[in-house]
Each structure stands twice: as C-alpha cells, then as structure tokens.
Length: 185
Length: 100
Image (cartoon, rainbow over the protein chains, first blue to last red):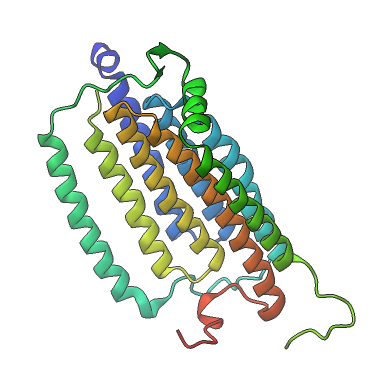
C-alpha cells in the first residue's frame, strides 16, 4: 500500500497506457465495426486520463467532449446508417497486404524497443509549470485560452474556415441526388 | 514521476497500431478509426512535450489537431455514405476502380 501511494502517478500511467494500447489493439482486430468503435472509445478515454496526468485538464475535457461525444457518435451513426451486412465467415483483413503489415509491425516493434531502452536510461526531467501567462498564475483552461487568442489567433481563424469547408463538404457528399438527375450506375 | 520518454513510447505504440490497422483492415470505417488513433498518438506527443518544456503552445496545437480530426471524420464518413450509395459496399478491395 505504501508503495502504491508513493508510486501513484506511475501506477495510473501504466494502467491508462495499458487501456489505451488494449483499445487500439481491439480497433485493428475486432471483426464488427461497432465493437471496434467501442474499443476506440476506451482508447480515447484512457488518453483523456493521460492528459489529466500531464496537467492538460482543458484538453482532457475537450478530448471527451469532441472525441467521445462527437466523433464517436458520428462513427456509430454512420455504421448503423450504412448497415452493410457482413457475412460471418467473410474476412475483415486484406490478406494480400499481410506481408507488408508484418514488415511494418517488425520495424515498429524495433523502434518501440529502442525507445523503451532509451526511456529506462533517461532520468525523469523536472516538469515545468503550465499555468503561467506573463508571470501570472492562472488555471489551465484560462492559460490555454490566453495562448490561443493572443499568440495563435490567425491559425484559430484558419482552422474555423477548415471546419466550415469540411461541414459543407460533408453535407454535399451526404445528400441525396437531385430529382430528375439520373443516378450513376 | 513518469519520464517524457514513457509517453513517447506509448505514442509510438498507438501510432504503429494505427498504421498497421490502415494497411490490413478491409472496412473503410475501421480504417478511419485507425486514422483517429494516429492523430491521438500525435496529441499524446504534443502534451508530453508541453509538460516537459513548460510551454502551453503544445496544448494549443493539440486543440488544432483535435479540430482537424473532427473535420477529417466528418469528411471521411460523408465519403463512406456516398460510397455505399454508389457501390453498396464499404470494403476497400471492392472499390479499387483506379486499380490502385
């Protein structure tokens, strides 16, 4: 118990990291898209927890609101809207690309190994505080807001245009064909 | 205290799983989910370095990444709806009209 309390942050990190990786493995292995989507939800929530651990409370809230609340609902909605019947014995994987995936997997596993080896050799750095703007101590949300609207105003406006274009594009692609126009084969 | 490198390794694992998923999965919807995994891995990196360097710019960029991810999901799912209307399938090997 003493060890647990002393290493609380470490324990939470490994629990959340394990959950995130398990969710990601579920996304690429589960057959049914709905199961994959719920697995992805686990990854999103675990990553939100990691954000809290890294003193990014605002982003953790945004992660849950946008990903778990918005993107995930969109995915599930489209899965149910499309509702393509999957035959039980139908493969969900592209067998032809299995060698490519195997090679990629080995390469990335080597990279992870090198990274883990380097991680054990690096002493933990003292993390700097994240709530100061111009020498004043604020909350995380307020500090992010100051940065966003003071230093990154132009990118913020550009990204709002990107969202607008994406919204119009999604509507145009998702609508039904205009009547009188012949549907393409 | 967890070192930043632990977060980088976790991010690498998530990114790798996303890449492998994009390569092997047949279902277009699942491939889009793997893209979301990759963007999440990028966010983990941004947050880890924001903490390490004590610079809030990393968190601001993560906000932008989340925005782009939402836009990408909306567009991708719009494409899926159009694709199903046209071809009645979400399997990527059945829509290789350009022989890619």
